[in-house]
Length: 194
Length: 296
Image (cartoon, rainbow over all chains, first blue to last red; front, side, top):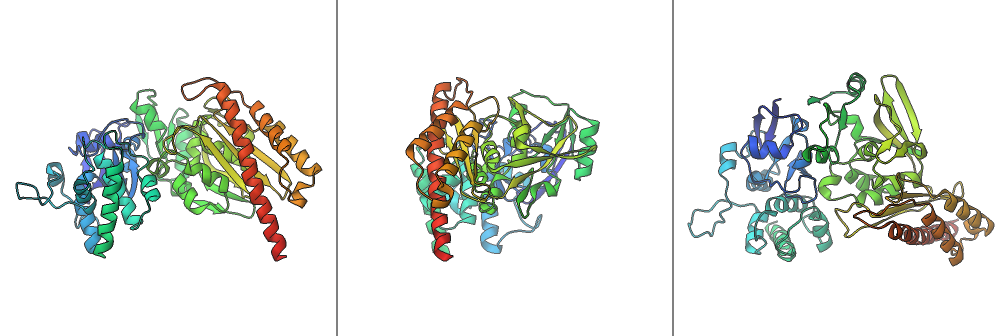
């Protein structure tokens, strides 16, 4: 079957989609967006977290056919999404967003990288790098999407709020302390910017 | 596999009548796991996401008509006053990502003994609104669970909503697991005080082939509360009454040993949760009673 939906602000079409296929599979294998990670396939680990019509969900548990006409934001579009939110308080579909080709090429190169040619990161991405919250990096995309959504809803989270918002994302490297630091840092910077 | 996408409830009922083997999918948090792991290859998937009214609720005089797909997140945020037991149970469901998608209709459809909503529904008192092209019926929650992952739905029926009695007194929910998130209950317990009828109701999860009520424990406690005049005098529950209630709740279990816990642990833990939730709810009731007297 064919599925039409919006990914990172741009309309996309996925063809030859099997009826039992997950949104995660469509993103990774049909649209070439491997940022959302495939691990447990049962909603336990959160590494496939994306925003579906604004709400964080495990994309491995959404049937592809269910996203027809919906809006999805993946980690590849997070920097643009955060920028548009900061500048305009959101975005009308199609007017902005991240083109698929750009999203496929997307790499986290912070502006202070040695090459000098940085990519603009969302505040939460920059905070993860600055706080050393990334080790193997596999859980990072899901954590970024979940943390960014929490900060959008709750700009001044307590530690308990952060723990709860990230309770569906497993990390096996960091012990979570650096991740907590990163989210606190992003919240503090967000507060300063206002 | 065919993917059916009805645009209305009527279309969904017609599709289910035409294809009784169709598996309804709403949040997908159970169905997609089975498909991802190749445990299930349904001939038809029946997507209910386009049917907006399934995600709505109505607060009536005596009960809340909760649409089958109202996500747990919404229950926690919006229905804590009317449905405190279910709101507490909802908060223990998996993670924010899962609570954003899953709802009570799916819990009932799957009818796993470990479903987090069941003890709260049993304790509050509820009816499942099931509908097919033949018509609509209300199934009392006590008659809904018929076996391990089996329920009273006919092949052509879909769950439209759950009618849950609004709380008329304190309610509590307790769950045993290894952490506070992403846990399938080792066992769970729900308790609701119903001061208007001077009764208590219970619900036990993950400790029998189906979610069950501890009816003997309820009858014992109802009689003990009545006999001691507790509903009127608001005294603290006698420790021997709480102990006996806990033992009867343990006795209502019919658990198994499995990877999450042993049968004897489950029996023991249900007793502990019964005693604790009774204390919490009763202390809350006494508090309420005192403040009512204060303003009267």
